[in-house]
Image (cartoon, rainbow, N blue to C red; front, side, top):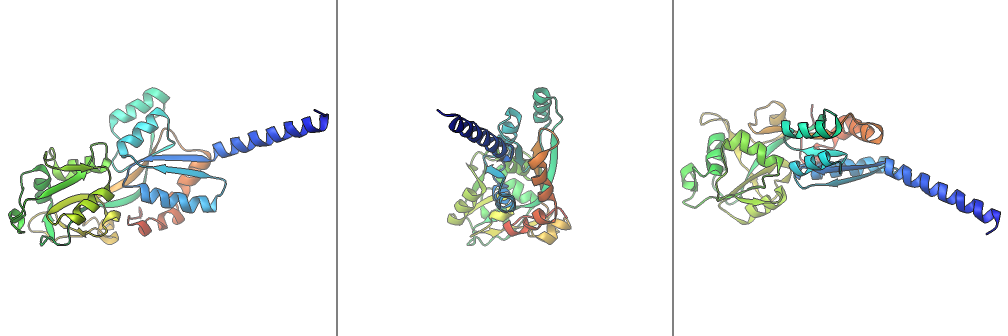
Amino acid sequence: MNKAKLKYGVLLAIVMIIGYSFTTLNKITIKGSDTMVILSQKWAEVYMKKNPGTTIQVTGGGSGVGLAALINGSTDIANSSRPIKPTELEKIKAKYNKSGIEIACAKDGLSVFLNKGNSVSELTLKQIGDIFSGKITNWKQVGGADAKIQLYGRESSSGTFEFFKEHVVKTDFAKTCQTLPGTAAIVNAVKKDKYSIGYGGAAYAEGVKDCAVKKDAKSKGVFPSEATIKNKTYPITRYLYMYLKAKPIGETKAFIDWILGPQGQSLIAEVGYYPLK
């Protein structure tokens, strides 16, 4: 091999190494909440168009799965539709000697899904809780047809499952509740089953109807919307979060700053969720 070819080979190798390093430094991985997948994918799609040197990979699996991935170091950002648990924070602290960072990035009205053929159109929070705990088992008990209620819910690794259990059911779910791997699957099941009920992120309510939710028997039923989420009149409202091991730096910080800025927040309503302000 002559000197010219050798120098060219060395130069090419250096360029490839630099290119590889650049690509690696500008790759962001996001994993977790299935509720947040369509939102994060939208953010990633628009951001990558504006920043072609950055690659953003978004996957679901549930809030618990995302936080576990953050703890074991296999994701940069964990999406979660529930607040992180103290035990999860302790694991981050023990492994990385970091306190963990919580970033609220959007708001969500957790919808209760009903089949369009169901005559029931509104329920109180207590009735919803009693239905999913198994205390109410027939639609006639809440003013509907004489038919058994079929329950559809999320798996226990889901932040939506945990939030709904804590804030609505307030006890264990009925054993008859069929768990499904995502909100889209719940919506699809309710769409096919006239006497069923499910729950999930408001953005997924396609082909089913939202149940108007009443705080109590004397209250008026309220649907999830930007206005009712903002003024807190819709009873089942939550924040959606991103978690990191430590304060973001570099491209990850730039991406999060963009999400929290006017451009990122303006995209939230397009996929059925609600901006922070």
